[in-house]
Length: 253
Image 1: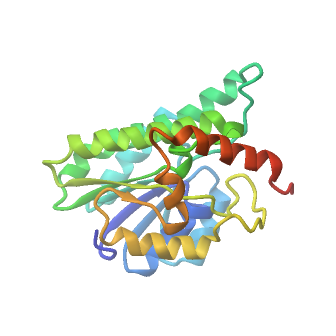
Image 2: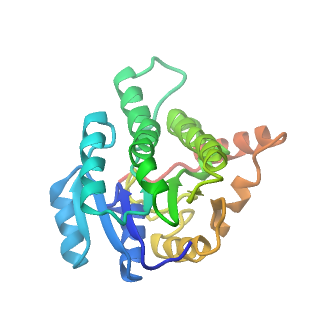
Image 3: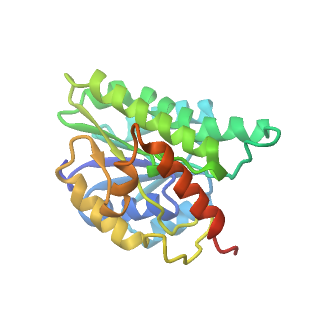
């Protein structure tokens, strides 16, 4: 994709990967509109990036998605890039009772949020000469973390949905890309400073470089090993990764 001259709406853009992508595209001469739940954080990001716009949106709410996307279509007729980045990562315990409220909120945010936003904007995007839907999944879509089992499952679902979207839209002007980050040290859970995590700045730089020529997936070098481990022999890798996390737990804040 061309990295300048686009009109881009990105969800979950007040921190971490979302903010990093928003600022990277903004600095390259794109019109960027960021979405997020907290107005104070939206204001902080737009103050730091003059010319960037913001809208309040909770992607777990179908009503808000419908209202905000309708407004976006009216205010930004040239909108041609949707980046579905908003997500949450609560830990869960599949060996105990399900926290139903947490599970429903997770699925609404991480899976149905991107699906609903894509559906709300797809006809608008198809009218553009060149348009992109960029879904943010994760390498845990391929090799899951047992301590975040449902989160991993939602990311696997986003990968699957992206494959279907890409094929279904193959004869339109809309291309579907998927960014599958490795562990990046952001506040998705909390910034840990763990040496095993990739730092945000090099992740964003490498991702932007890959986006320029990507046709399907964007996986930085640090995520390639897990991405390529999916398949008939993935069981050993799943066991190894999850045992490593147990033996070397994340540092607590």
